[in-house]
Length: 263
Image (cartoon, rainbow, N blue to C red; front, side):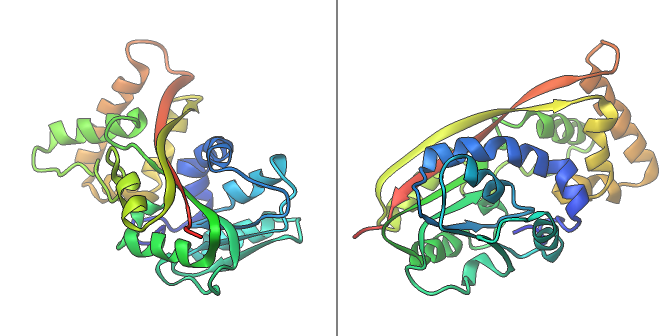
């Protein structure tokens, strides 16, 4: 979960990933479904991107977000003005909620960072009522994240010993679908969701990495100054791509899976 992979600061997280989570959240809600009066769990809620998108789709009874990173939860609480929404600090692998407490559970872009991700999905199944749905999305880091591939591929050329972190739990083709089926969920479907990452300049693109947030940033800030400067310049060249610095748009693809808890 955030906090175990270099995710710690809410403002830096917003710049690195939160702004893209907000873009992807509506697509995941549409895919997972939402009904009037639903009690919703957002597991690994971050700064609240998915929960704050719910009212545009249905008048839910309640929504509970939980995340292991306290600064993210604090940021979500500060932003929240809806009495139906609550945000808790806790571990996805041991959810502090009773069995069948929710009608559906979502998880947006967090499962691939959780050690023992299977346990987290088992916990979502436990706290969702029979007939409810479990829906999650993870980044397709290998094939669907060019903004990260630019960094890691260049870093891999500069340092042939680098192990590029493209594959994490559940982010390969069909991996979530297999787990959902292994856990006995019904009507399982896996698909891909596409959004765009819009950067205004190289500085807008690079600043989140340079801040040290997340696994990307942790790698960058731990480099010796000379090697970090070389990496920065090569990535800058890749970003501008022989044109003046300025806005760039990059696709971003996530795997998404949903399934129904057996009656």
